[in-house]
Image 1 (cartoon, rainbow, N blue to C red):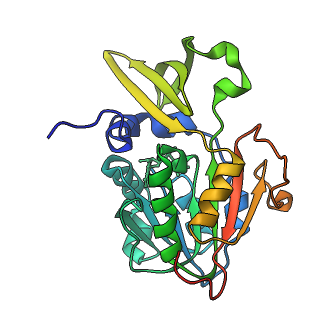
Image 2 (image 1 turned 90 degrees about the vertical axis):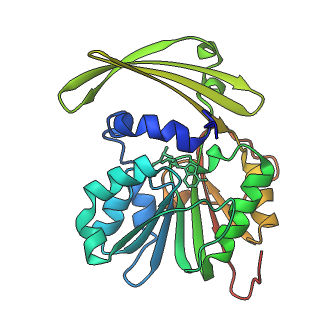
Image 3 (image 1 turned 45 degrees about the vertical axis):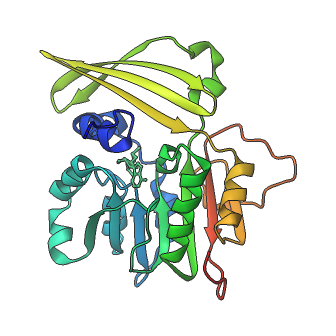
Length: 262
Ligand SMILES: C[S@@+](CC[C@H](N)C(=O)[O-])C[C@H]1O[C@@H](n2cnc3c(N)ncnc32)[C@H](O)[C@@H]1O
């Protein structure tokens, strides 16, 4: 069978070795997750990748299940967090909520750092959310970190190659990055160049604005849906009638007690 080169499984097989260098130092989102957890709650992170967010969740004493569809990313998470796996505090699973829920139920579900935006169709996004809803306890909270295309901030970058350097351990890596929009989908082409090596990666992410996100969540069964424009739990608010989407944003939704199946 031929591999689909734009699928997240394929993309993250190649991206995994560069991922930690690419996101190095980014921790601005930790607090918003940490404020929602307390001992005894069952926590699920979807799109856990190499464990950037799993680590502080575990350090705060949470019992966590980390889910991803990339074996390469899960392998790196396992390598970094092996002692938590051994102690039973962390379970790592290769699972895709587009296709089914998991039997365990959770009190907190975090869909971190634009993972939701890898779902390119409304239908897949809806089935993903319905299956998450089925895996949540009554009163459980879902928090998702949603992507805003960089071209919408700065249309001048469309189609232009941009260059920067990353450090992978001691090794410098040259990164070229070019973005284009195809409807609501951003195509990001990256070329990672290091001594004697070159890796080309194309990532597709679909933009969902706040109104579409609220519609999807309500259709999936969530009644209470709130938004925040920054990584700050104090800023969550109901969607205003004419509210526009001008940034990446967070959305928080609750499975109400007695809410029934999505
Ligand atoms: C940008 S990375 C985020 C990794 C990590 N959570 C972080 O914040 O650094 C997105 C991750 O989502 C995963 N992913 C994409 N689609 C997914 C899906 N349907 N279910 C689970 N994981 C998915 C990718 O394999 C990748 O590891």
